[in-house]
Length: 111
Length: 113
Image (tube, rainbow over all chains, first blue to last red; front, side, top):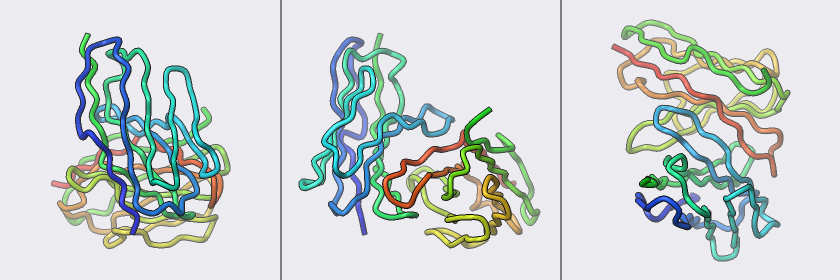
């Protein structure tokens, strides 16, 4: 069974710092990897979707990379802001109904 | 509005009662899913549907029933609610079996007393 791990579990940084969140998965046979953001008491907002054939995707200050062979993805957030504070989840899709979520990284950006 | 909407946003019900959570999507995505999110367990798949009238069990289906008579609707019914079903429930949809990403609704927070 696919296992998805995110490191660190929690991260606190001062505003303006660049930061990297890590996601690793055990089975490289994936269709895609998706990064989500979840604010407390809210739903999941999709940030970036990387297909298995792609190496990276960018959206604004966010950049996600994918190294399928090593089972790793990183989410890079540039010039962090207090509004970036949330829990970030990565998820890998291995089939039509198989979406495996990571354990999440809770990010706090201190003003 | 376009998107995926869930209702109600919050629900309190008593043990033993039947309750239905609604999910509606406007994209005509083939695939729809129901997840529950609990502390310590993350997100777990309850049921999914590949198309109208096609549904199948996920990881934690016991105590739940789904139907999908129309592509855009995927209601989740708790036949006889139990306290262990207190959770946050998320509906999601996906365009395809392969490369399509998932889009999630805002969730329903259900409390069973």
